[in-house]
Amino acid sequence: MEWQQIEYFQVVAQMQHFTRAAERLAVSQSTLSRSIAKLEEELGVPLFERVGRGVTLNPYGELFYKRTSRVLQDLEEAKQEIWDLLKPDYGTLSFAFLKSLGGFEVPQLVSRFLAEHPHVQFQLYQKSSSEMMEQLLSGEIDYCLSSMTEERPDIEWEYLWSEELYVYVARSHPLALRESIALHEIAGERIVALKKGYGTRTIFEELFREAGLPPNITFEGEDPVTVIGFVAAGLGVALLPQLKRVDTSEVVLLQVKEPACRRSIGIAWNARKYLSPVAKQFYGFLVGYYREGGGAGLGRKETF
Image (cartoon, rainbow, N blue to C red; front, side):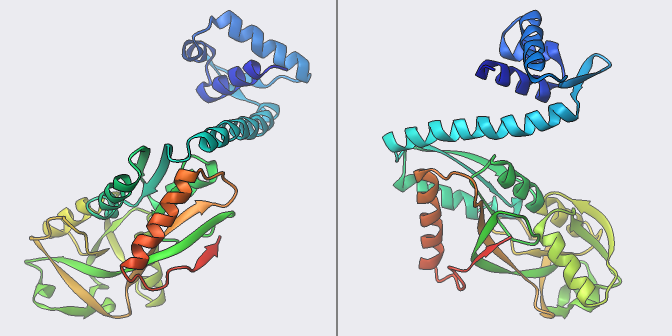
């Protein structure tokens, strides 16, 4: 069995099509087919089933794909470790964060880190909390900046700071003249919320469940700015953190006096994934950044 055979198999499994896989690999389809046939002959079982013009993994193929993915990932990490020993101040850092942190918080963090580590390259992603957990588990990213609202194996999370959640209402809304309200006062209101999978949505549902209130959700969005736009148009109210550098001139933020509405933000990573010197430097920078800012609760680790 050759490494090339495993690589060819991986691409076919991902593309689910021999012709497209051959184009990506820059080889002829006949060469690719012979390689897969030789691999199947050596293993003694078929790995694919034909579906129309494409192919899909059978149970043998799924098992082989899972195992060989780990082998290839280990190989890439071994290469990376050698490179990191040679040049510990160089490298690429993959980092995901909540969309609500993209307007100010994350750009400031990245800018300050690059001022101290100019040779680092960033791969940045904006995702929901659940999507970022999947990225961590697959090894696609090194860290994510998120609230932790769901348990995942091998994922560690360290608290950095907390944010108050406010009720957003349109300026024309009867509640707009108030400075604070209790959560039950919006029980009958139309609710504009983030979609399931976002940490703030999970916190929102827990707060309403604990209060025994059935929320009337009329719109679900993926972007807090869009949610605020719907609120400004008088289409409902929302529960969100205060967003920096986002136009909120058409809405009013009301403090929730009962119950306490907050979310905690922290850095999460996969305890089983290799972290490069650059990634470890970023972790130290991030924790130090919030410690200097007086972030209460720093240093508490949780494993999920």
